[in-house]
Length: 241
Image (cartoon, rainbow, N blue to C red; front, side, top):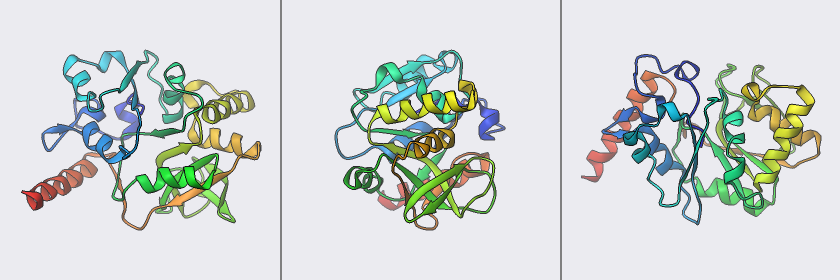
């Protein structure tokens, strides 16, 4: 889980804390997101962080999984993919890998997404939601239930990426990253998940979409997004009190 994307990139104006550590209902946002992402089966969270942002208080905020690892990255990559690449020395290349940012909340049980990737035997699974027709999120063109292209800047379908990606093993992700960099001659700072997945598609990898129902994707980019999410959290607390 990369926590290095600069605030200007996530439209989080008005907050002095780095985005993952903004308080929502008295807890850092990252804790809400990790609870949402955590599967019911054995797993390990790996966080990619900027050392300059990591005070002792913020470090404790990440201790929400007993075996979590923290990878320090001085270069502060600007994309989800570039930050994830920095975790290479901390992952098991033969184990499934899920890459997720901290700018979303998914209002469904994500075990279904993780298990779908495992059960189908696909190389990559992309969690998607109905697009609003803008290029705010990457979109996926699908043919016969296979993703055949992803685009960051052009709207090529009504299926937008929810920012959560499943890879059958970490090696698949890193092979795709190496291929994307060699093909486009891109720098790490502009490496994207779309570029990696397109490189894997070129190599005939199986990439499937996992569509979310309408309304299940909750963005956590802007101050308005966070206010709406905080209201939702507070209402949930009241209902369970």
